[in-house]
Structure formats: structure tokens, C-alpha cells
Image (cartoon, rainbow, N blue to C red; front, side):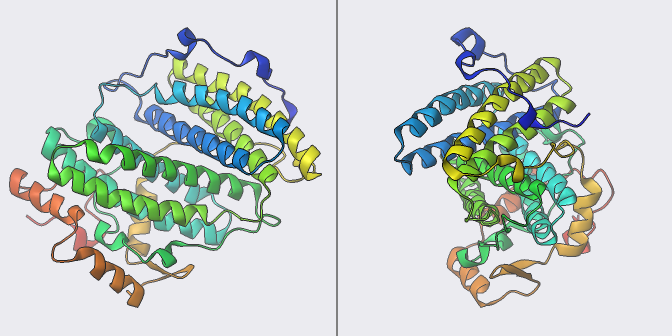
Length: 400
């Protein structure tokens, strides 16, 4: 049955504050959970963090005391939601194990969005990014085996392959060339707006995670790899955030954020395999329905527009975590050699790209190459998980 969040009032705001016992959730068991349950947790943590950061920015630009108070009230609930969601992750997992899960999110979330995106220009933006996150997963998987002596399939299972994508050393571009053209807020499909906000939020949380955890390692090669890929995540956030029309008003953005949270909690509630986690998604959905109603009221009062005229009449098909192995292989076949120039894409390296490469590489290769060299020296081979056959690109096949 079609579900339109605008038709539901949800849990009243004055009943949404939870006590310490309710916030003290039991984490998932990392050795027995569905890997995609972990992916859904990581995704919703990023969505909640974006909601919080956006609300703070809106409050800092808003002179209306009543609006600031309403934002603060909802934002506190969002913070409680974020704490519950993020605290579902198990403390026994290492930073690197959580990193592998973050990159599995980046691959399978962005690949699904790319497959589902109706706008060709936006689709290309997601396809381009997938091949870079795919390579990050491969680099971290080799680091994981090298320093923790475990294999990445213990995290990603057989759901996501682990092998080279667009080589990480080729991800370092001039900042000008990370900025894309935005969608037109008056013409874009409502689904495109949800996609852009979702992927931007997920990549932003990955960037934040690496900014704060990379320096916690003692091993020099680990610190260096987190530093390199952390800088690329900055590029990715720039890439994705520039897809959002900057002409959207604060009220429009607020409504889009709340609608997107409803969409994602509804999506994950529909597909969750763990009954206990499913109950969290259902509870948070019913909270977000009330947040959406409040945002819509603010938009009507301060923006003079009806939210129903801007939003989808019902939530789209649920956003689904599922294997994207063949799709990623097709992208490797077709787009491995792409880079960006201005707001478009080219297959040949250009002057700005070469200048950035020269400035960064200096006298030595990047950490993403050195981690592979060290892995081969210490273990005698690379770590790969190629479940669908040999690598589609002959140049990236492992040669003994």
C-alpha cells in the first residue's frame, strides 16, 4: 500500500524524549549480524548527523526566536536518535572493521542510487563515485589483513566484492574539478532530491569518521592511508553536495531533510531482518513523521508555500541494500579511466589533474600504493574477494 508521510502525524513531540534506560540500546553482535543491518545502522547515523548539523546551521542564520526554539526542540530528539542508532554498533569492533563497513555502505548504497536515479547527469555523478569507494574498500581490506590478520569477508560477507576499482592515486583532483552542476529544484524529480541528500549525508559522515579516527592508529601505514582516503572523502562531499540546488530556501531544505528521514526509516523498516533493530526503525519513523509535520507548518508560515506541491505524493520504492556486483563490474568495464574536468567528465588526464598529482605525490608514491606493496612483501599476495570471476580489467588482475 502506498505510504505518504504527509498523511501521518506520528508520535507527538512532547512524548518523544527518552530516558537513559531507553537510550541504552544493546549493540548488534558483529559475528552474527546481517552485514546489511550494519550498513543500515551506519547510513542512518550519517542521516541523523546531517539533520543535526543542518539544523544548527539553520538556527545560526535565523533571527526568529520561536523558530530557533522549535528547531532546538526537534534537534534534541534528533540527537537522541543519533545516539541510539550509532550506539547499535558494537564497541568490540575495531576502527578498521567499522571502516570496512563504512566502505561497504559507500559501494552498495551509491550503486543502488545510481541504478535508480532518473536524471542522467546525477546518475553519472553516482557512478563516478562508486568506483572510487570500491577501490577504498580494497585498500582498507589489505590494511586489515596486514595489521589485524583477519580477512574482510568477515565484515562484508560475500555480498560485496573486494578488488581494485579506479586506483586511489587517480582520485586526487584539483578542487575546481570536484564541483558538479546542481539539479534544478523546480524541475528535478522528488526522488533525485532524496538521492542527493542521502548520498551527500553518507559521504559526509564517512569524511567525519576518518577525520576523527585516522590518527588513533599507531602503525604509520594505517595513519597514512586514513589521511589519504580522508582527503578524498572531502572531494566526494564536495562532489555530492554541489548536486543540491543552492536556490532551495531554508524551509524547503528543512522539509526535504525531514521527508528523507521518513523515507529512509520506512525503507529500512521494510527490509530489516533483525526484529530488534526493525523496532528501532519503526519507532524513529513515527518520531520523524511528527518532525516532518512541524517542518511543513514552518514552511507554510514562513515560506508561504504548500509542501505537498514540492514533495513526492508517496515514498518511492524502498531504498534497498543488496549486492551490486555485476553493476560495479559493468562500471569498471565502461568508466574506469574517467576523471573530471570542470563540471563534466573526460577520459584523458588534463593539465589541472596532472598539476594536482605532481603536487601531492612529491618524491614518493601515495599511501594507497604503499599499503599494497607492504602487503605483498609481508603476506606474499594481495587480499581480494572476487566472487564473480577474474577482474574485468586485464590491467588490474593479480599476477603471481
